[in-house]
Length: 246
Image (cartoon, rainbow, N blue to C red; front, side, top):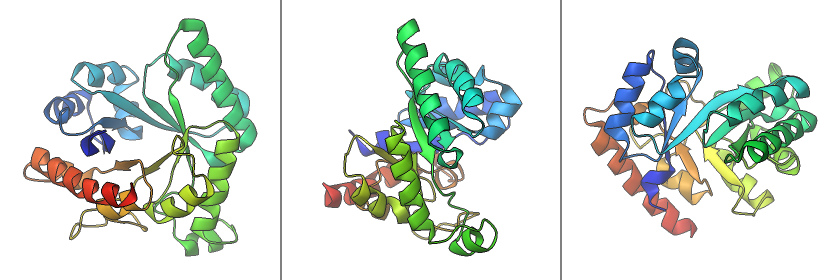
């Protein structure tokens, strides 16, 4: 696959019209468009079809499901009918919740002859430092330890991959060497760019070299004077890391 197909662009925008315009402009420059809370709650689930009609090849629904197993299972039935490429769940919801989501998605997609969305389990948010993990969340060990633990849990429960900081990608890949198990990394910033609210960041080349499959990159593209040129430059940098990891 071309590196540009591995760029996930967050559509963190206040309206469906603005998001559709970005999808139309960058549809040939990135592979996946991510719909998160801001857009989903302001525009509703109908925005998924609007983004697809604007030219999005694949849609990442960043739902971050986290509830009791039955509630997540019923949500997954509805999400499966949205024809998205993938959906996120919090791995910290536990194996029963993750299995319920997978079973529900399997059943719904089979009964309606749909392509099942990939299930990606969120491990440790990239805004969480080791200090926050220890002092506020009372989790022993490092963020990397916790991310690897949750990745193993997710794989065992039937998830297709995880969302994790690029700093945990190499350890997760070592623990789960099956390349069909996807590692999606936010917290990726080209050299000399602002980190924003991310606590654990890495460059695109380094993230790919560490074993990431897809990179979530928003501000460095959307805030650029020429977003298409920015996406193209990032894809070129990703190729460097990808080659070193092949």
